[in-house]
Image (tube, rainbow, N blue to C red; front, side, top):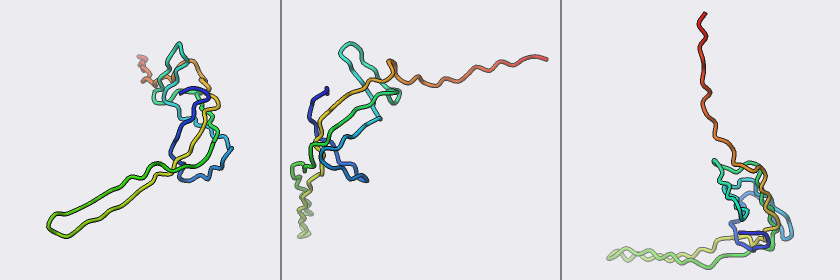
Length: 112
């Protein structure tokens, strides 16, 4: 993904988002800037993605059919997932390196 791309993402369950709003995603797992790839451990520190909401849409309908043979049981259900159509406004790389892994500090005992 790059700046200017339009993508569809799941809606945020506990947040009302309106058309034209700007969202910021701070939990970035991987950033690639053409020359280097930064992989988080587990997240890339300082990286952010700004998104502009273009509207709410629904995905294609999925049909679920259940049947039990010789029991006269049939059930059909349909489901349409709520999605947000967003445009990538900016990708901020933040720190040049991924967040360092914490290592155990070596302890030295002093003899008295």
